[in-house]
Length: 250
Image (cartoon, rainbow, N blue to C red; front, side):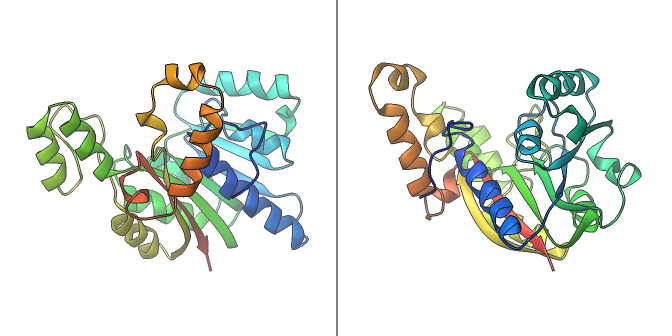
């Protein structure tokens, strides 16, 4: 299991950060320098600022002016403002603000489930990657939604999410599409990306009350260990709140 990072200790994001750090380390060992990343929907810089602190030049595309203002403030406070380029734009129109083959890494976290056309967005992501570059994609998991609606007593909505082609539980569902491991892998493959790693994110982290973590010595570390132990193993991976894929352009 990867060593726990002091900078990113949360069990809810630890798996994603472990994958990203491993990819950056791999590129560094291959002699790559001055890496460039695109963070689609990266908003306030939760990933962009730490990546910039690791020496990556990051372009962030987001629709929210307020989120980008927060990003600018965080980047300035962290001393990495010169390494981050904020662009106000829509993920559905990504090709209008990016150039083909211009990034080593693309992050697309919690975006594919809300865009109008996930297939078109992934195709654009693939096109802006340099050969050998990779995409980090984090998406909502259909199975987790079915179980969550059922546990909360909303059985009709759970059944709807189970049967619906897009994994939506009803008309009031704010998510356009949810994925499972098969549909996510197929979507990326259709765009010419090869999935190298597939993990569950927040396998158990969302199930443990925060009060328990605060009140029991060692509980947070134990949760961190459990998340890593379960994140790549079926069936635990397949019922996580989110699915994370690292996919590479050939």
